[in-house]
Image (cartoon, rainbow, N blue to C red; front, side):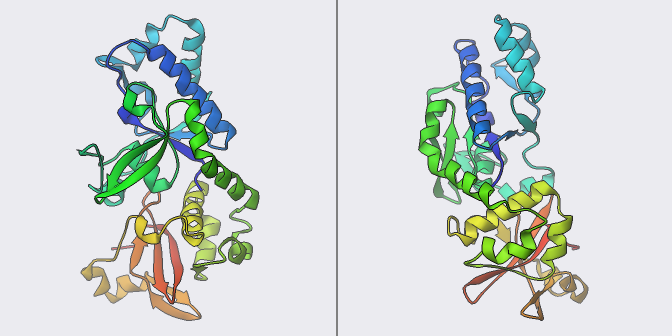
Length: 297
């Protein structure tokens, strides 16, 4: 499970100034509620200071015209990470944008090449919106992924929380497991009792991995192992023919199964910073051979 929520940038800008201040108050209540439920970070596609808050009015101008001192202080605290830790951009580089999202997601027929709602589905978390329009007053937002209807967890007011109690309970259960990079290898069969098997190469990869990537990878694999999601629901592909035909490049993709080196072709692309996760489906098990930076091409 991830430890962050995702901002729905489609909820900005407001059409006019009516109700904007009240919506900010509700937005902050949402973030506070999520923080109490172990989602203390909010990911968005750019720094909040860069957003158009009301049509034609960007953040600096909006901030300067806030009439209520208490609200202005809250907004200042928000943009300086005082309410929640803000991380941007959503995806780290152009390669992630092209390979992870591509043109698979749409909302109301409009392309969601890169956006909070698509990333919310990809990372299996919850999206947060401003109550700028009635369409955001829902606990689930429907988007399409490869023509399939997807219900994305969503909130724009604290009353939407009750629809997601199972999700928050799952986060608490994951935290109770206390999966860490230090104890992962020793307890891997306890954490992944059903489908997932790790090649011996993964041990060192996990130990040296960035903590954020580790949490993302473990969240994806736990969801697959427990049956919450199928591996085919994630963005993945095989290698190009040029890689398959090059013995030197194939060597980078040979990982150990039952003491034997095996070529792994398919790789998940749902991790940040250009990381990949190579897997092999065999005998109703899913073998993980590699979790790390993009391998040489």
